[in-house]
Structures are given as structure tokens and as C-alpha cells.
Amino acid sequence: MQFVLADPSLHWRDAWFLLQGAGHTLWVTAVAGLLGTLLGIALGWMRYSSGVLRVVTAPYIDVVRSVPLIIQLVLTNSFLALAGANVNTFWLCVAVLSSSMAVVTAEVVRAGLASVPPTFRRSARSLGLSGAQEFVHISAPLAVRTSFAAWVGLLLGLAKDSALVSVVGYVEFMKSSQILISRTHETLLLLAGVGIFYFVICYPVSRYSARVERRMAL
Image (cartoon, rainbow, N blue to C red; front, side):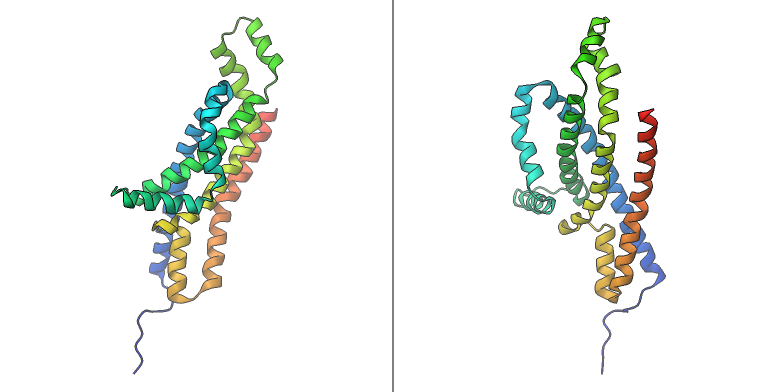
């Protein structure tokens, strides 16, 4: 007598399971992208404006940039477990992804500010603008225009890197697809769906950012 442990076929209820995973992916990407960008802007400004802060923050930035994201997720989860800290998996993923986003954003911001010609700053100060006014009206807008394309690339990379958070138990879109693959063995169909999903969320952002970049260049 043969026993069937699970129904190996796909059902409409599996679509809801995948939609939940997609929502988790979008949510963790949005929160981590926002927090990482804000922290990266502050960190990049500090690294540009102060040589001391650049030296102090260099070890943190070098370590986070050099260690693979999946290793950061596993180690952070393990350290918290050993410390007995009961941290929600979502916020664990957000913390690690935000940290990764922040360090690369900081370097983009620092490079963008450094690309502003010194003559522009001197001219603004000679016209009577204070340091803060010069930064708000001259340096920051030029740095944004220089760094915008690179930042969008980082954001798209973050959306794809979010697939790694499944290693700590967070069920996002890739993990939900893997669960269904294990049950149904519809590998090509489900992986094609994963690829289409990431294309659908990344391509419009890429096209829209290109339009915004052209407007800023006018």
C-alpha cells in the first residue's frame, strides 16, 4: 500500500502563500532601504566632513563591506541566540540589511559630496552664504544629482539580496518558492516566477529612476 504524505500539485491557495512571501520581501526591502539610506546619508556626511570620523568609522565600514551578507545574517542570528536575546526575525533581517545598505550608501554620499568643485563652495561663501546654507543649496543638490544613479543601483541590489534572509528563518518570496518546490518539484515553473517577480519590482524602479536622472540633468 502506498502512502501519499503531501499533495504534489500546485493549488490556488499556494498563490496566496507566494503573495505573502512577496509582501514580506517588499516590506523588508522598503524598511531596510529607508533606514539604511538615512543612516548612510548621516554616515557619509560625517566621513566627508571630519577626518577623525572617517578614521573611526573605517573599521566598521570595511568589515561590513568585506563580509558576505549571508555570513552577517548567520553570525548576527547566532550571537543573539547565544546572548539569549529574543529578537523578532523581521527586525533581525532589517538590522543586517540596513547596516549593509548604510555602509555602501555612506561611500556613495561621501563620493558625491567630494565631487562638488571647491570653487562652487568658495563662491557661495563669498556671496554671503553660511556653511549650512551653502551645503543645503549648493553641495547637497549637486551631490544628489551625482549619486542618485548609484543609490538606485544599491536599492535594487538590496531588493535582490533580501532573498538571503531566508537563512535565518524569514519566509520571503524566495523561501516560499523553495518550500513549494520541495513539495511539488515544479522547479522551473516556480523559479521562473521568482525571476519574473524580481524583474517586475526592479525594472519599473530602474526606468523611473532613469527618467528622474534625466530631469535632474536639465
